Image (cartoon, rainbow, N blue to C red; front, side, top):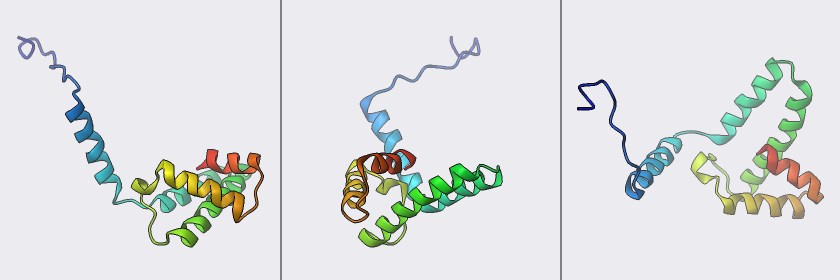
Length: 111
């Protein structure tokens, strides 16, 4: 009846459908490069004349890139961004860069 009236059928979310959807998104994201995406975002800030934001974000993304290269290397895919990785980055900022809590919080916020 719903098809005759032009009303679409409602798909009821189930745990299996949700898991399948999330897994499909993760698999699609594996083709990307998170750091390349960050550089595109930075370039957008620069093109729009948001120089202060560009410089601030560039410093924070450079910190993440330094961390990634020293700890993992290679391509940073979106699927690599986990809570564990963020915790490692936070520790790295404290130990390697000797950043204060507020500075670390700003880096994590931009990430």
